[in-house]
Length: 191
Figure 1 (cartoon, rainbow, N blue to C red):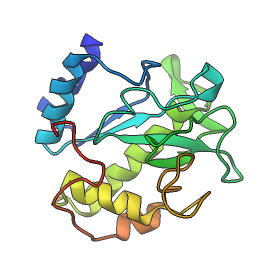
Figure 2 (figure 1 turned 180 degrees about the vertical axis):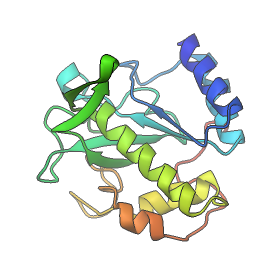
Figure 3 (figure 1 turned 60 degrees about the vertical axis):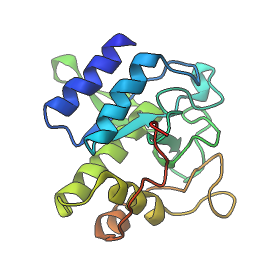
Figure 4 (figure 1 turned 90 degrees about the vertical axis):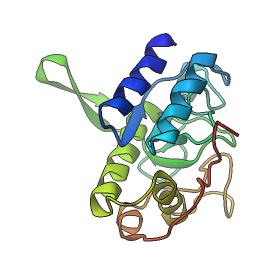
């Protein structure tokens, strides 16, 4: 827990604009040290993206850091755009979903392996956010968050729902979006 808090602060201090956390505490709650670190990130206009957790790990609901206000919690879908049976949780904490099955990841020693789960979906969203910031470097974290959620393709029940959040990310629409927001649509931890 202390390493995560220190890592978030270190990343902010070293110029990160988006931080990906493909990890979970398997608990909806988080330690006090995270409050200060995540507020520090928000105060410096840094976006935090987190994996929601996986059903295959016994998690049925999103867990911290994905449950923290202001964090973009990512669930997963399969190739048919359906909630992944193994790689996604369900709960009001899900913000968006991204592909989570049949992906490839790099491992130490230059090895490439199959990868799945919300921990694999979250970096896709983080990469999309990096492209959005490249397209509009003056956009605030609130602007980017609003663009991400408002451009998502609605899946499941109409509108926001506990399985898909705002929907499946739509990279082309998100990158071309220009809407602005004074406050994050996801709230803030400081509140």
